[in-house]
Length: 189
Length: 381
Image: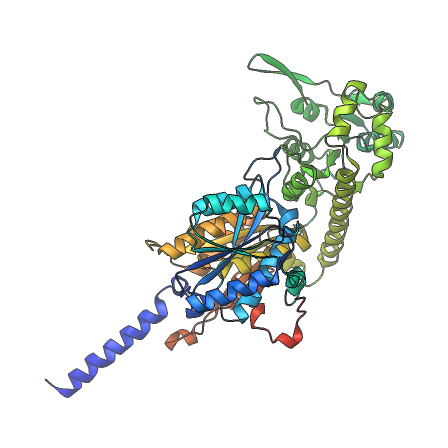
């Protein structure tokens, strides 16, 4: 075969490849850093403006060891007199900055994060609905019964009875005073 | 929207308040009297006294267009008689309760649409509105007060008003009026005090009303400055210069939630509505992870009170431009894009394409704050 024909075919192929790369819609592809690499999922539920720093650190340690994703979940309560699909901007004004803070902190430590928001008549109801919709391998909660964390001892007992995942309940400790709060958000969130 | 003033159109003045009983209707009637004394032809198109004697008293001396009766199923309802008002053609018409929903069988489903028709006929209108009826504030106020208001009006209606007057009263004074029977009849006072009329509700609503009017004043000042200036034509091209609306471009992957949260915070600060837009390639199948992320995005949008829009298109820019124009977006928020490869480097980046095709709309690229060096941040840990 004539060399010039081979060169022409190769050039045409190269041009076609480049053109295809140019014209194909790019929004279907995701950058590698945005793809979730891990498969195991660690749920970190909270209801208030703070979580125990030990819970967060335990989630990060486990996620690193197991190549897992941390799923911080803000559990919002819908008052009984409102429909369940009500928007909750006042509660979100408290919960979203903490979700942001957890995500920023975990991402800077090299752990992938996939946040969630649950909504129910109570924290337990929101958690139950979230568990019905999502798969988790592990849940990490702190047993400090701090109203800012939102989950009571009764809720923890319910989780042990009903939740089909490994549950890590952190024993109360002096370190529990160290918390991650909404003030940890970098920049003007 | 900044448009050349239509001389033939009537002028709209709205008296806005935090709740029933602050004196909106009373003030509207007083202004009606003042206009009548000044020699204008004034009529009451619709007045709701709610049995308040002092309101009924101040209405005396003003001509009124009688209500018409509308039969709906087994009931006979009384509604404003729009055709009669248009036939009467006064110079100024007083129409109470702008957010009211009309009975089926009338010309328009909503009273603000009737008001639009009156204005279009060259008649000036005075009207009243409670702040919780504004569409963009509805979710916020529902959560604050625990009561969902079903009758809402688009914020643009208030934005188009020529004048907005806040009728302010302290919560304590309003509660005093309520207890004295000046707001509701005696049999309804206890129920009102136990439900909506709580000091914390009223304080929050008052704050919302004050903010809303402050924003209206600010927006009007800005648009007034723009008219006649070099930027006037640009502002006129924007679909909705008064009343901000944000559009955040999302994809079903976990990082999109960060963009949504940031967009929502910005929308909260601006008192603006928020739309989320995902442009899906035709025929694209979603992976399991993407389906999960999409469900999480929909849930987040619902909890935040944002609207999730999903469009199918091959042309990302065209789809965004179409949605932004349709929704009256004033800001577009996008996440950081991946580095271009090959000849794609020669292509005009998406933000520039959007700025070219959407003049007057701000385009904001939302950064990943976790990439910031630690030294420049507040740790708070």
